[in-house]
Length: 256
Image (cartoon, rainbow, N blue to C red; front, side):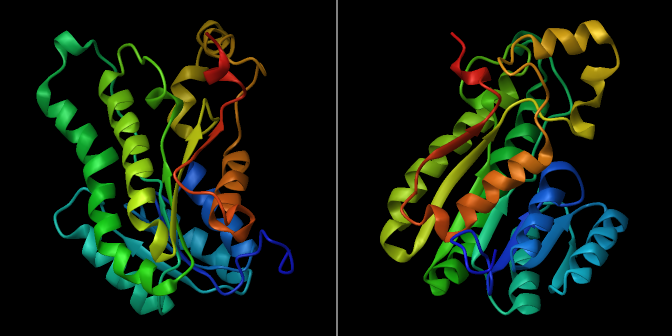
């Protein structure tokens, strides 16, 4: 792998939301490809377990226990990353999600604000904090993890869909702004992925079948499949790619 375009040998990466699911697999895939990795999330125990796996691959791993929505978190996370890894070449903004679904008419505005803070505002702050280091890298990649909910209507999840759509627009605008500064910016767009965040959709067969009936491939995606996409976007395999969306959704977004 080290001799291929997909190698990350000598690279230094920061992955947020790395304690589970997609973020965890991305961090592992990067380490296997040769990168040293800083992993950030709220669950320190899970991060320490992941650190052991990464260090077993003989890569440096920096654990950062943090809530990206807290004031000052972005600057602290980037500072810890630079101090622990000696710089930064790859930023994966994976932390995000939503804990509720409700019709817009009934939504408390505080819920809307919390969703935007987690899925948009915290990412803007992280990018602002990280850009000086990424520009110094001279060959850097920002990967924003969005969702198919940002590509089409998301009934009862308008807050989440709007946040993920904003992240797509941010990706495209920023990509143009920093294209001549050695920083590429792309968005990874997962569909329905089998992680603990979607466990509630698998408690009843009827609910699960309703979800999967929308997916032309007829199955859940796997977090490792999304990690493969992140590895592509982080590496020189995508060296002429910026401002783009890499959609991994089993064909869901192709449906009318």
